[in-house]
Length: 431
Image (cartoon, rainbow, N blue to C red):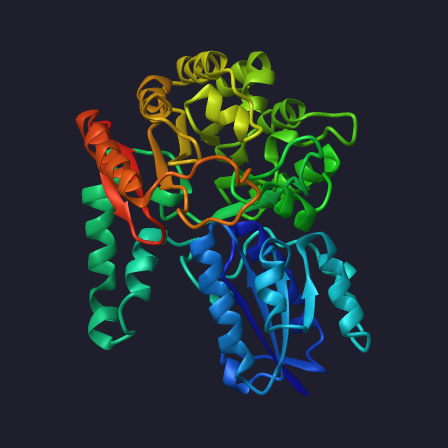
């Protein structure tokens, strides 16, 4: 019997895939046993992410670390596509990009239960997650826990720490998101892949699109049935997620607003958080979304605007009419004042001027966002961005980050320096 070690240092979608693999090997327990120690493994499966160059470099180092064990290493996730050149210098093993996840079964032909028989899970396993624990836990608290040794003293005081963080930081914001609640949540993955016309990211757009493949939406009935299943299991907090959430349905003669309309008609007491939605879809479906939001079933929209500058958005190949964006966001807030709008923006994108940067800050101020991230564009980035565009120096990046911190604090946001990348987390104080 061979031992399998599965480790995910990736986005939530890739974590779901890794969890599905975990269930796959658990079902074939006559041939494989799950181990949580890489030194014991015969096979190591490493699920990766390349949100930024900084993270990608850390994960490349992690690949080298796993290669030291006497085990076969299989890589999944986006790193094989986004960091192909760097990876090829020291790794020539098996690679499974997100678009080919089902091919893992080809590497284990003796398994009686086939990978295709394993349903996509709705609750990822935090036990295989290498970084922040998003699965039915508070990520802030879990991040603190991971930073300390698992001593008895810490275990005894962890509940007190959790209560302190919640009472003094989270409850005061009243931000309606799973990131600030202890309630377990149920994920409905509504589609895979990206809309062909628009890259998925301003960092590794084309490469990530190639890694995840074209858009493949689930039928509306399948999504509704999954949602009802979660309700039957007692869940009250739901997350709709996808590689390109707002593009849902374009490949099956449907659309995202139609899906939301069907789901929010389901009776019951529940909250829905929507992940990874680009601003273009909010603008396109605003009339229908405005009516849906009035039902007060949508608690949070995570809208990835990236910039408040029309010029920068055009370079990013993103929807760039900032006035229509702002109007749509404010209409949603008017439809449900309790709706939480979450965003993240990038500052220091190549060729960004002072006016572009200030436009982004003003947009955050005027568009009604309660919480979000401000990232600095990686100075040494080797992404899909046109390399003829002038890069912003590290000195200017630091200056703009400092300015952003002061600017947001003056708007009564709680601002925290985010440790994973160079950036800020800001939360509106609603007291």
